[in-house]
Image 1 (cartoon, protein in one colour):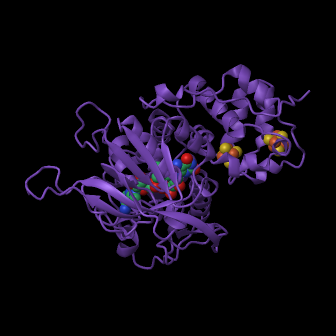
Image 2 (cartoon, helix red, strand yellow; image 1 turned 60 degrees about the vertical axis):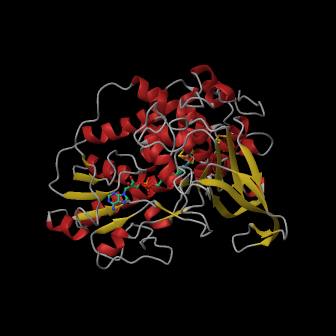
Length: 471
Ligand code: FAD
Ligand code: SF4
Ligand code: SF4
């Protein structure tokens, strides 16, 4: 008999007051009993609407059937036919707009907790797996991957399993892309990403960090070195700014820099090499997942007050609902329908050598109201005349989006990009305008999701295999 409880089993979490002071994972995961109870809510629908909501079409009812039967390893094997990062996607996928949005249980209550079950299965597998994956027999072909985010790691893994000699070139000193430098530890523990990177190493993938393609080596030089195909998964790490006065003041960061310094340069340690802030008031501008991550990181770094300043209302906030709820519970102050117009700095007229000179002191904002919908259907924010006000702040973090970095395009002949800088590809294969060069993930679409980047890596790996096998 299915479990007809209208609500999902709640996810156990650290208490808001406790977690706001530490970087440990907020959501603690289902135990076995809870996973079995949640799996029993699935009706095993014959037409499987949930599957069409998953960008990589995981056989959701089938894996949940295995959870019901208590065969968690079989459930894992079903998920890993389609996804190479289930422990990651089970944690960070926007399930509410993907698989769970299509779940029939959502019509009269809450959908089945598909993401939570996926996380449970992946964590169970990782805790019980014995031995490392074994390298496949070499097929004599070499492929270079640019970038070690989810698209690059997936493409590398799929090709290595087919016997290709794969080298991943990563600009930073650690592999994992946004999964390590962007998404904070309290949402995605780094050990999970490291486990994926270690599995790739066991498959024979060579990971070359601190190599910037376009500077250290060009795409042409990769071909000259004997690589027969190149996959570009370089992401969209170029931050956008608002273009308002004061953005170059000390204490103004892009969210990318802020999060990288915290995640990779360990700014949270007692005496960090690259400190980013000392207490004080922090304003994060933006309303996406990146803004929520930056705000919650600032809180954990010791900010006395953290604002989210967003120009639309709660309804339009693009961040995952769960992350917004967690941020609110932790005490982040949401200043909705507000937009910054100027950041003002400290200037001591009596002492030009005052060390505080040139640092952020205030942010001038204007209130907004919502007008007619724009071309994307979201109501357009309009400034309310005469409603300007100031917020006292010591640090401002700009999280209003990112674009693909133009470096690779500018150093590679014949690579076409669209007006937003995204590499143009054939969607069925990932092939770019240049023979042998494939691309996928945020470098193509602009900032998107882990699962879509992973899916693009899979598509390209299949096409590269077909190309090099002369099919
Ligand atoms: P990335 O993950 O960006 O990886 C690209 C890699 O390429 C980087 O490591 C970069 O250093 C490297 N690189 C770049 N240029 C070069 C070069 N020239 N040479 C060598 N290496 C290079 N998505 C979700 O689904 N759920 C979430 O909750 C979520 N939260 C997010 C939070 C933050 C803070 C951010 C920034 C993003 C978030 N995303 C989330 C989006 C998601 O992480 C990305 O869509 C995804 O990581 C894109 O994968 P990718 O492989 O295309 O690129
Ligand atoms: Fe849902 Fe994401 Fe898992 Fe697909 S990968 S089933 S969208 S949680
Ligand atoms: Fe189960 Fe929901 Fe999918 Fe039906 S739609 S099979 S109930 S997860």
